[in-house]
Length: 172
Image: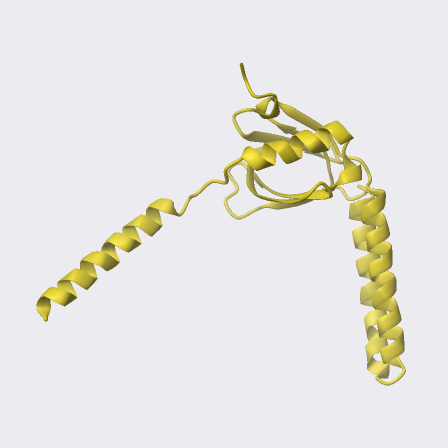
C-alpha cells in the first residue's frame, strides 16, 4: 500500500487575493513613510518612481501577468518536477529547497534540469491553490528530504583536517 501523499501532485496556480492585499498594504506603508520623511528630507521623494516601478512589477507577478509566472506545477513520485510558465514554456527540474509557513503558505525554490546556478522562487499562499492541493503539497513537503550535495565534501574536509591535526600533533 503506497502513501497517497507521495503520488503525483498536480497544482494549478491561481491569483492570490491575500498576496495582492499584502502587496498593496506594504507599498502603501512605504509610500506613507517616504512622504512623511520627504517633508524633512526632500531628496527622499526621488524614491517615488522606484516605489511605483516596484509596485507595478510585483503586481504583475502576483496577478500572473509576467511571462515567467508559474501557472502549472506537477510533482512526480520520484521527486522530479515539471512546471509551465504563462507564455507556454515547460521546464523540468527538481525542488532545491522549501519552507512551509504552517497552513498559510509554502515557499519553493525550483531548479531547472541542467542549470546549475539558476533557481526559480515560487510562493504559494493558501488561496493560490485548491484546498486539497495545498494540503497535499504541505504534507509532501514534510516528508521530502532536501538533497545534500556537500555531504561528501564535508566528509573529505573533516578527514583532511583530522589527518593534518594528527600529523601536527605527532611532530611535536
